[in-house]
Image 1 (cartoon, rainbow, N blue to C red):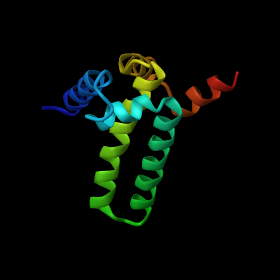
Image 2: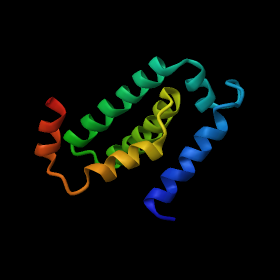
Image 3: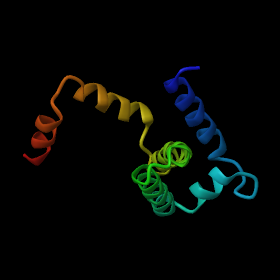
Length: 107
């Protein structure tokens, strides 16, 4: 299973658990608490990943990166943003310099 296949499977799992009982599913618990809680949790995991990377803790960074990807997908679900829309935006940006893309957002 490729990287994107694994992320798609995770997204499908999150979508399936969105309607589950919060008592039975951590994903459902997060989503029931709303987008603010999901955003906070994503931010916490991102900081933990950054710290592990800076400290050279490769194994910890790997685990935190997995947490970041999971919490990103939960946050997108809570915010009503389809991962396919994110992928479309990445395709739109393909072949564009990062500097040029960033400058275009300022106008």
